[in-house]
Every structure is written in structure tokens, then in C-alpha cells.
Image (cartoon, rainbow, N blue to C red; front, top):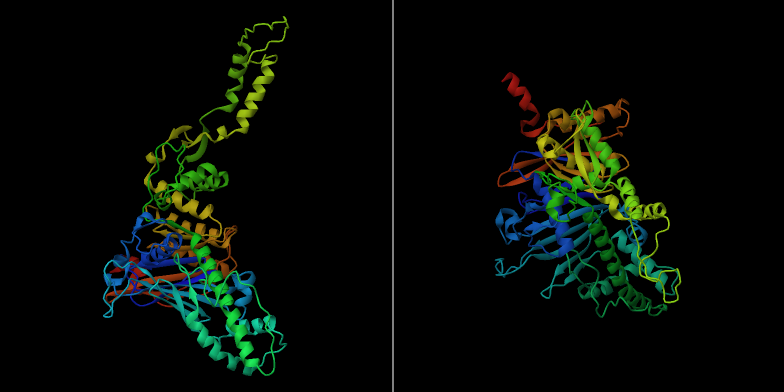
Length: 552
């Protein structure tokens, strides 16, 4: 599971920045400080993994809300000779099967990428060069495990492998015991393997067709379809035969590691859901409005489809619309059938009773007609059959989502009830309808009353720490949102939580402040104690504005 991001030379950030990812990560800072760059780095990685395109402008996640402008625009200060750094920290406790076995000795794996365009001998960008992954590195508990660099033919070549790392020590030990006739491996045996591994390293080459390496390329040292060998170990040639065994099997383990970590990273990126800072107005009539383009999702339009399809989400949204401590509106979202199935039975019966069939008798004067049309003996029964066929079809999906004013029981349009409703509904749907997702949101508080901004804190807490188990990356200016989170932490510590609100502790929350620093920006992690209080003063005077406005 993703526990942190690392980004460098990307948009506002020059130096590498570590961004912890917890169930609730709140990102603050002044306008244009680089807050959204954190979210955009994830969006870039998701797009690159799905398409292989690193020179991305509009993304397949952010739509028109995120236009990175290509590599020469998103690299820091537009300096095309820089290498963009992007890394993901992964908690190994979530690894499964063979990957869990391989990384049993460590708690955290970091996948670190450096990407950029080709450079000449003077580090000048090559004309028409496109951005590619130039280095790939895996670290285990902060210590480099292996590193690969791009060759001229586009493949990634292994140029460093720490076979003394606990991960590889255990891997090599297991390989030797399983693939040879020896029953023990001695410490001095590892010393004898140094030379064999050093010779092997430059021969190991990985394929990289997308964003991440997808295993080793077929070569003389590794053939995915090759058969396993059993190496006999003699006393006279123990060193040579152990080396041969390791040389034969180590690439297979490297391949397992690359594929396994790549699958975990790709899985985490696939969980990303993004909602942009400006939610769009959906059509006035909310029937047949399903879309599958990035703008429909990033702009929040998809939320209305979810409300139409999912009765449980619709119920929760309606509670927000009507509750006295929430929006306090007289409005309710309901479904209205475009085809009244129950109203079809009467006309069907009437129509069948009026049917007259003129049939010519057979040549043998048989009373049984031989035409293509059946005789309707029981119109009522036939009407029931037709009605049941209609009910079993998809006709029940022919409905529209409408908003009614409960005071007068009249239909009103969501376009006529204030922009705040259209802006907050995608936020609510993103929280209520998601399960085990990474939900990235820019400015959830837009067009909301301060009290409702605070209430969104409860929505995020319930979605993150309740059954949904979502993780939120929220770029915001809302003091009220944070105050509610701090309040719930205090109530958790004092055992005073309201019913239905999950407990929340400092390990569940990460408050980040993005601050300009010269020509760059830096991310500062603001720690909270068990009582929900900041351990350090808030930088930049954010929480002091109210005081200054009252007493300055």
C-alpha cells in the first residue's frame, strides 16, 4: 500500500520532497505555491502507466482540469536538461504471495524513477527527444537494492545490485538450497559469489514498454520459458558450481521483483480518482447522461450518474440536502420513470381485446387456421405475459433524476437552486460511493458556507476510517475543515466522539504546508498531537488572519 510520494524537479519543486499519504492528507499553502503539483504528479504517473506517454498535456484522469503542457512545461523552471524524480513508498505488509516472501526481511520498499529527455555530451537536450524513464531504482528500508539505467536501444540495463542486502541474502540462500544438492550454505560461500554476480549484473536487461519495467527481456542469461536445472555440488568445485546456480536463477528472482513491485505500483495508481477545483454543471435534464471521458469525472458530472443509479448514495446525499445541521434545503433528489410500467397493463388488455383475426380455412376445411398469426384465446393472460416481459427487460432503467421542492411537491432544476449544491454533490459522492480508492480533490470547500466546510471533515473521516477505507489527498485553503479534524482527534482522545464518527488519531492524518522558498517550493509536515493540537506554529500566518482582522 502507498505510504508516501516523492517528487523533485517537477513544477514548483526543485529539491526532492516527501509527501506522506495517510487516510486523510490535507495540503495547505498560499496561492500558486505548488499545492496542486502534488496531486498532478500522481495524475502524471497514472496517465504514463496506462498510455506509456510521458510528454503528456491533457491527462486521461484530469481531463481539461489538468493540462501539464508536456515535459518541457512540467519540468522545474522549464529546464529541459533536468531529470524529474518520482517515487512511491510502499508498505510491504500489504504485499501478497511470492512478493511478500521476497520482501519478508523489510518493512518498506521504495520505487524511484528519474525521467527526462535525451541529452548530448554537454547536457543539452537533444532535438526531437521525447521524455523516457532514464533510471529505475528499488530501495528496501531506505537502502538501495538494485538500480537500472536506460541504454541507447531503449532498454533498462542493471548497473547495480546489492547482493549483501538482507533481501538478496535470503533470496540467494533459498535459491542455492532449493536448486542444488547442497544442504547448507556457509558465510564464506557468499564471498565466493561476488565475482559471479558482478559479471552477471551488466548482462541483465529489462523491458520497459510503458511507464514501469515489465520484467526482464529474453537474453542469454534469462529465458522466461526455460526449464529449471538442479545443480550438483562437489567439494572440489563448490565455488564454481554455486556461482553457476546463482547465475542461472538470480535473474529469475530479479524478474519476479520487477514484475511484482510494478504490479503493486500500477494497482495503486489505478485506484486514483481525481476531482478538479471547478465542478461543472450537468445538463438540466439528468436522463441518459452517462459518459466515460475524463472531463465527466474530473468535472464531477459522473456524480449525478452515481446518484441516479445507487439508492444508498442517493439517500446519504438527500440527508445532506435536508438535515438542519447541513444544507437545510427543502430539496430532495428522486427518480422519475420515463415509462410507467404499471400503466401499460390496461392499454395492453384493451388492445388485445380489440384484435380480430381473419383466417382462411385449410384446404381440408379444418377449423385450425394455418396463417402466421396466433389466435389470442385469453387476452388478459397475454397482457400479463407481455407486462412481465417488459418488467424483465431494461425498460426500468428509463428514468431520470429530478429534484423536488418538498414544500410544494414541485419539480425544480438543480440549475435553479444555487451553485453550492452542484459543487458539493460530487464531493459527497466521491466519499460515499468509493471503496479502497485514493481520492484526490482540489478545493472541496468552494462555494460552501464555513459550517459546511467543517462538516466535510466528518464526511472525509467516515469515508477514510469507516468501511470505505479510502485515502484522501485534499488540496485546500479551508481552516474550518482542519478545525473539525482537530476537534475529532481531541474527542477521540477524550472518549467524547459523537455516535457514528470513527476514532481518528495522529497516525491517520497528515497536514502539509507548501511554502515558496526562493525559486522553488518546499513541503513542511505539520505534526499534530493526540489532542489535535499543532506541535509547531502554523507557518505563514494562516490561522492568525482572524485575530489580525479583529484586533490589528
